[in-house]
Image (cartoon, rainbow over all chains, first blue to last red; front, side):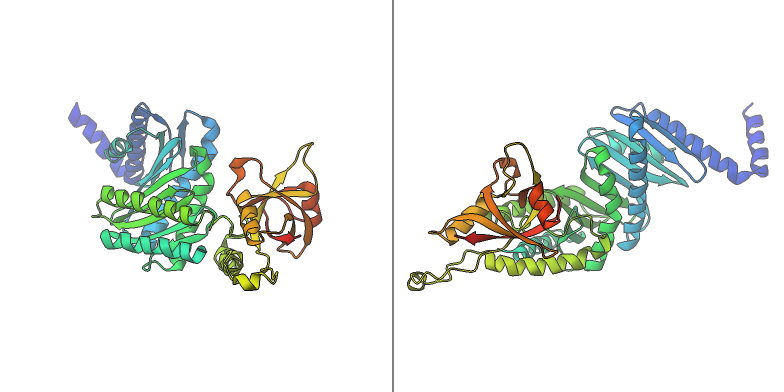
Length: 131
Length: 273
């Protein structure tokens, strides 16, 4: 059974290797985010790449502000890493008075997780990198 | 003490912090409106401006999360940290081996302590010499601020109620030049509010009164940066929450005469009766 499934994958890989890899990566990331959403204090997430975006926020009214904040944070990290010669940009944590945001780029996907101030962002980061 | 001294004290603090934490590569302090307050000697002003520009969009949208307390940007070779302290933003750039807790402890103890100390020594050095309103273009901020700082320094030099005159000279009733203070216009309205009276900090009025002990100060001359001037009555701000913020509460009628509106800067000097 296992052997057969592996064969199927191999066949598909030959047909469209990059597309499958990306799809697998994004779907794995999405399933991780669904899991993270249930962590204590997590209020939502934004996942986007060049072709699609998934947004799941407890307060959809803040969607646009959160999306701009997320995008600005990732861009700032990139710019400042270059400016100060800090190598590859990894992650950003913005602590607000009410909400904390963790943003990072995984492969081609930009992820932001929004959580309450006391939520464990390190645990979420670890989970995201483990996708 | 003027803005230059204030910045000098903070700059020295940043340099000392770097001495005790060599892992801090760069550090500087800026205000939300983009004004650079102090920077260490390793960081060129151009770099600071770029960083402030990068944070601009974040700070603009940070209301959605209740304003920024701190920002931590992690990279493979180091970290950029921004902490909000007393309405100022402290930026530190550290190498990847830096002890995050040690750096945070040092910066979060030293900077607020120095800020508090400066606040006590000179209650409103940054408030009376505010930079131009936020509506001005970002790119012009530094040049404009420099201009304002220079102007403010000149004015502050006049402002200081120094005992310039010896007692025998004072007896000849020479009056010192009226000090000029800068304020940000704030609206004041209501049924019982006189339309010919502005309100400013009681502290400023007291300083003026100290300077002209035997004279009454009931009126001020207000000048806009566009060159409009008017004279009107002055009284202390009633509501203590508006004190010490470098504002002048001004009825709409006077704002119309001066062709200005809320948020703009004006120069105010006392009229000695």
